[in-house]
Amino acid sequence: MIEVEGLTKRYGRHTVVDDVTFRCEPGTVTGFLGPNGAGKSTTMRMICGLTPPSAGRATVAGRPYRDLPNPGREIGVLLDASAQHVGRTGREVLAVAAQTMGVAPGRVPDTLGRVGLNPTAAGRRVRAYSLGMRQRLGLAYALLGDPRGLILDEPANGLDPEGIFWMRGLLRDFADRGGTVLLSSHLLREVEAVADRLVVIGGGRVVAQGDRDDLLSGAGTLVRARDPDALRAALGAAGLDATGGTDGGLLVAAPAGVVGQAAADAGVALTELRPAGSGGLEQIFLALTAGTSVQEAVR
Amino acid sequence: MTTAAPRSPAVATRPPAGVRRPSLLRLTAVESRKLVDTRAGFWLLLSIGLLAAALVAVMLIWAPAAERTLGNLFTATLLPVGVLLPVLGILSVTGEWSQRTALGTFALVPRRERVIGAKLLAVVLAALASVLVSLALAAGGAFVADATGTADVWRTEPALFWHAAVLQVAGVLMGAAFGLLLSHTPLAIVTYLVLPIVWSTLGATISALRGPAGWLDTALTMEPLYTAGVSGEQWARLGVSLLVWLVAPMAAGLLRTLRREVS
View 1 (cartoon, each protein chain N blue to C red):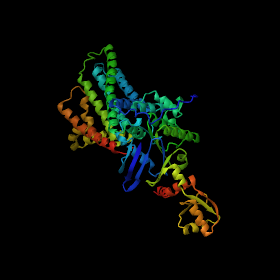
View 2 (view 1 turned 90 degrees about the vertical axis):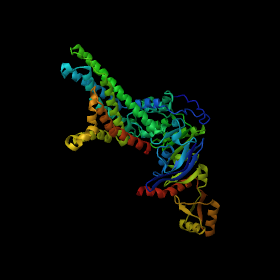
View 3 (view 1 turned 45 degrees about the horizontal axis):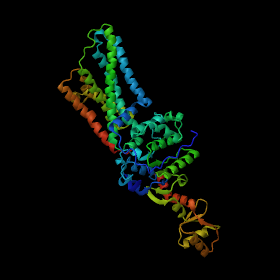
View 4 (view 1 turned 60 degrees about the horizontal axis):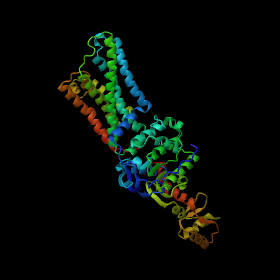
């Protein structure tokens, strides 16, 4: 449904998106993960034909976005919830979109109800909307054309926990009925709960992608010892790379058996040895993207 | 609200709906709607109408009886309308950028030239409608003048009306062109209003510029359009000035808008 091949965006000498390749299949939710400034939004804008790429290509339903005759009926797009005219009512925003796409005006109240905006809220001007309400309106805008795919940039921003839970259910249901969802986030936890596939991006490059479960199980081994320095030395002697975990343990990119053997060979007593699980993915996420975050902060 | 919604059908098994692209007519209707569906747009249009009405009233009360003809009343409304219409043209374009609605608009219609074409058609229709409003208000005023004893109230030359249409359409398109080129509301409005004034001042004070100003200063070249008689040379001067102030910024603005990044 969505195919991205070698997408690259350069501004002068600065490369914001660097050779990004991935695809989103019908029936799946793809989580597009990365810290702020990693290039997620730029990639999404390039997919939607709003930013011209420096290299590479992207297609939606087999065609470049700009060649879609009526894109709103194929793919719903929410790139920025605050990009709405503050002087229009929520209902009018949708009515204008419905008229553009040739959607029956009767779908407007239905769609507003589906995202939880009641008639009172729909009659208010967007100026008076909270960020959460704007996200709901933006989601309604994306769903209005009854599309087969959704491209959503940080849709959970500004939603309360109940709203995030509701949105997960909506997206899961959309994908389970055969739809394709690409959603971005800078929070792993937010995406982990709903995505089947993950594409992790840092500094403009894809640093990891695959099935969520594979990424979770392939995250390595968490190991802990009473004497962390001895453990580190033992792992180093065995040629295993270890990174510090969030809670004092070490994360090793090797099966538990290999790690345990290395510790036993060096005579180091372990207090914990287990597959890293999602904590490991978080570690990967942090490690792979830490450098770029720092760059972002310095720039 | 309390009943559970029936489970929706599968998303992918449904054939791709609505593959037809929206027609230019549909897009023009959408852009016309967007001119009036915000408070700013609504009040701008309303104040254009109210100003025109006010000028007719002023003419009826204070102008010498002999001057209260349909033609004179009509001409009087053209100036205030002609000042505000370009602002409408500017806002129709720059509003997409200042309110960032371009993101949604161009996501629904990625062929940007179609959106811009629809916008231009919408503001041209608005300009033509304004001429009809001017005419209606002037006719209303003429009725009153006729009743209060002005002679020959209704005698006018039809050329006056289509010259007015050319005037207002050119004005609103110039505004849209400035909007496309600068895509920033205050900047476009100030530039649109100030540049001709600078030109006029320079043209009037520097003798070397007086000749070119007759061809390039739209304040001068558009003046004949307020009358029923426009000579061939006056049309030529108008054409040249519009080439510089309408066609050139429009072309550059169009290129810029088609190529620029939307974010």
